[in-house]
Image 1 (spheres, rainbow, N blue to C red):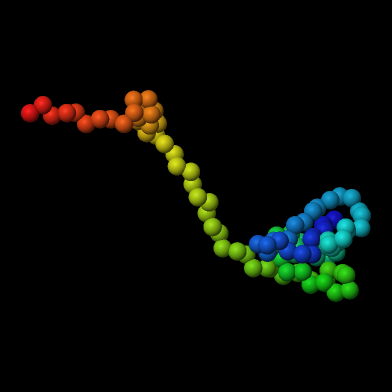
Image 2 (cartoon, rainbow, N blue to C red):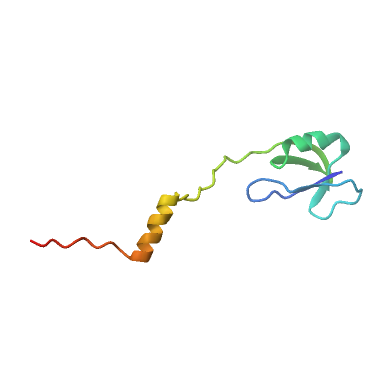
Length: 100
Protein backbone atom coordinates (compact mmCIF):
# COMPACT_ATOMS: atom_id res chain seq x y z
CA UNK A 1 0.00 0.00 0.00
CA UNK A 2 1.32 3.41 -1.01
CA UNK A 3 0.03 6.78 0.10
CA UNK A 4 1.13 10.10 -1.41
CA UNK A 5 0.77 13.59 0.01
CA UNK A 6 -1.53 15.52 -2.33
CA UNK A 7 0.20 18.90 -1.82
CA UNK A 8 3.67 19.10 -3.35
CA UNK A 9 6.60 20.50 -1.39
CA UNK A 10 8.27 23.78 -2.42
CA UNK A 11 10.62 21.94 -4.80
CA UNK A 12 7.75 20.05 -6.45
CA UNK A 13 8.32 16.72 -4.73
CA UNK A 14 5.55 14.75 -3.02
CA UNK A 15 6.16 12.97 0.28
CA UNK A 16 5.09 9.34 0.24
CA UNK A 17 4.89 6.27 2.44
CA UNK A 18 4.89 2.57 1.65
CA UNK A 19 3.37 0.24 4.20
CA UNK A 20 2.21 -3.35 4.44
CA UNK A 21 -0.71 -2.32 6.63
CA UNK A 22 -4.10 -1.37 5.25
CA UNK A 23 -5.60 1.84 6.62
CA UNK A 24 -7.40 4.99 5.54
CA UNK A 25 -5.04 7.67 4.24
CA UNK A 26 -4.74 10.65 6.61
CA UNK A 27 -6.05 14.06 5.59
CA UNK A 28 -3.92 15.64 2.86
CA UNK A 29 -2.79 12.23 1.58
CA UNK A 30 -4.27 9.88 -1.02
CA UNK A 31 -4.27 6.11 -1.34
CA UNK A 32 -2.65 4.79 -4.52
CA UNK A 33 -4.80 2.12 -6.21
CA UNK A 34 -2.96 -1.16 -6.80
CA UNK A 35 -3.10 -0.74 -10.61
CA UNK A 36 -1.18 2.59 -10.35
CA UNK A 37 1.51 1.52 -7.86
CA UNK A 38 4.17 0.72 -10.48
CA UNK A 39 3.67 4.06 -12.28
CA UNK A 40 3.71 5.95 -8.99
CA UNK A 41 7.00 4.31 -7.96
CA UNK A 42 8.53 5.24 -11.34
CA UNK A 43 7.61 8.92 -11.03
CA UNK A 44 8.06 9.67 -7.33
CA UNK A 45 8.89 12.07 -5.81
CA UNK A 46 8.28 14.47 -8.74
CA UNK A 47 4.82 13.36 -9.79
CA UNK A 48 1.61 14.89 -11.13
CA UNK A 49 -1.45 13.41 -9.47
CA UNK A 50 -4.77 13.19 -11.33
CA UNK A 51 -7.44 13.11 -8.63
CA UNK A 52 -11.16 12.86 -9.31
CA UNK A 53 -13.76 12.78 -6.52
CA UNK A 54 -11.06 12.04 -3.95
CA UNK A 55 -9.69 9.05 -5.89
CA UNK A 56 -6.33 8.87 -7.65
CA UNK A 57 -7.13 8.02 -11.29
CA UNK A 58 -3.80 8.71 -13.01
CA UNK A 59 -0.24 9.91 -12.61
CA UNK A 60 2.46 11.38 -14.82
CA UNK A 61 6.03 12.58 -14.43
CA UNK A 62 6.33 15.97 -12.76
CA UNK A 63 9.01 18.55 -13.48
CA UNK A 64 12.34 17.55 -12.00
CA UNK A 65 14.28 20.61 -10.80
CA UNK A 66 17.81 21.08 -12.15
CA UNK A 67 20.59 19.60 -10.04
CA UNK A 68 22.55 22.14 -8.04
CA UNK A 69 25.73 20.60 -6.67
CA UNK A 70 26.48 21.44 -3.06
CA UNK A 71 29.32 23.79 -2.26
CA UNK A 72 32.29 21.67 -1.34
CA UNK A 73 34.20 22.41 1.85
CA UNK A 74 37.77 23.64 1.67
CA UNK A 75 40.14 20.77 2.36
CA UNK A 76 43.46 21.76 3.84
CA UNK A 77 46.61 19.76 3.23
CA UNK A 78 48.78 18.87 6.21
CA UNK A 79 51.23 21.55 5.02
CA UNK A 80 48.45 24.18 4.99
CA UNK A 81 47.38 23.16 8.50
CA UNK A 82 50.97 23.32 9.76
CA UNK A 83 51.49 26.75 8.19
CA UNK A 84 48.25 28.04 9.76
CA UNK A 85 49.28 26.62 13.13
CA UNK A 86 52.73 28.18 12.96
CA UNK A 87 51.29 31.53 11.86
CA UNK A 88 48.91 31.50 14.81
CA UNK A 89 51.60 30.29 17.20
CA UNK A 90 54.39 32.58 16.09
CA UNK A 91 52.30 35.49 14.88
CA UNK A 92 52.86 37.33 11.66
CA UNK A 93 56.36 36.96 10.37
CA UNK A 94 58.29 40.17 10.63
CA UNK A 95 60.53 41.24 7.82
CA UNK A 96 64.18 41.22 8.82
CA UNK A 97 65.64 44.64 9.40
CA UNK A 98 68.33 45.79 7.03
CA UNK A 99 71.50 46.89 8.76
CA UNK A 100 72.92 49.32 6.20
